[in-house]
Image (cartoon, rainbow, N blue to C red; front, side, top):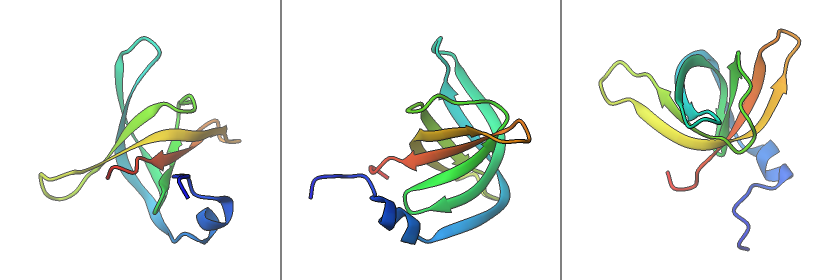
Length: 103
């Protein structure tokens, strides 16, 4: 099967790691090509993606780099695209990222 996306049942059965609201840095380009960087909260992490809490909306399909901060100088970078961006009652946005398969 050539479909590279997870089907709904596979996504639901994937293990999700609660990130306990760990701070991560994200970087993306806005509609003007300007690179933007923000420190935000990572809510959870799974085999196929991440769920983030951000104070700004990101358009669907926006490429995003996520940088996990470690105690060492070797920070882990992951690359993905915005799958969903849902405004919460708090005014923040729950952003679902699907990770690139090339990692």
